[in-house]
Image (cartoon, rainbow, N blue to C red; front, side):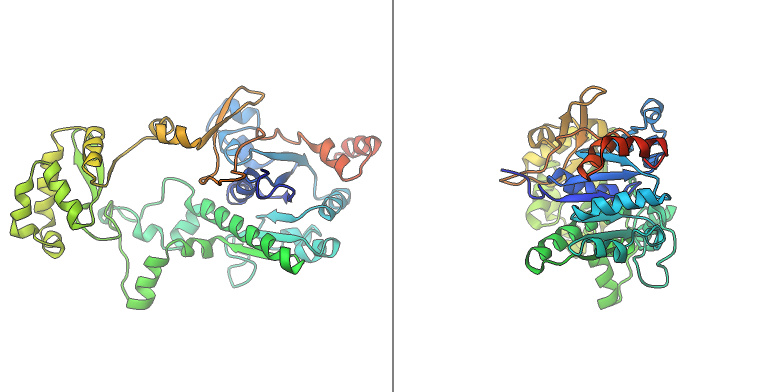
Length: 397
């Protein structure tokens, strides 16, 4: 069976991460995503995490979210390039961009201009603060949004100040939100026949991912604070604990789990200790409870404890490094990291985070080199060979 978005064409003007992450989700689900790049290409192509790949303009950060896409280069400052886009828009379902507000309008490629060409067009604009409001023209980046959204204020150890997540959290949240928004607009079009502007603000999306924390304040006036490696449940046995040579995270939240933990640690006697008779008592005596747990955990390493506690039905997890988790048999079984043949040899890239009984998402095409499909896409738009050669001579493409 074909994938859910087979037959949907997306003109992808996005770059960096928030935009490409979103279009990648629909590319995995079968959409024909045409990546429209400048003649220099998406900036992430040259990021220097690895010099060899950066010199190829195929840096790992670019490869990660651009599989299944095709690439065409256009100098959008040229009227001929704008005309090419408009011809492509006639057969497109979605235009997706993440420029600062007003950039596409100045190029003559904003929603009002393109919806005139194709009234069924869904136009997704991803930005830091959306297309309206006092911050609409303010530049945004992931760190600013982690700080501004309140996420950093609740992350980290109280003694060391606010902490940023170890990955571009707000970029990926913004991209995932945009993918859901575009999918919603495409579905709505099936029974209205109309396109529309989809306005995605990364700040809005970040707040939408912490609804419990926000509502605790707006409803009950409870101000969230940094809790280090503690759980939002605030239970003392849902936290990070030191074991021999490392750490393990426990997520012990019920009476049954607490009893299982104490028995697995060889401290069944703690179940009769009045200091730990219920959750209020355990919270009040957290330092003593932590000492009991960590003294027992010191007898073995985190991975061994993870196996032992899991067998006892005690929720826990050791701290896995990236080079460890990518070899986990669970991920192998689920085909989360998919291997695809490329001009550089086999590549393992992360696919979608879900499976469907019919038409599951997957990688079918290696990430494109810069402008790899320019001629192919122009021919699909009706340009002849001589016209394409002229556009190349004049540096339009």
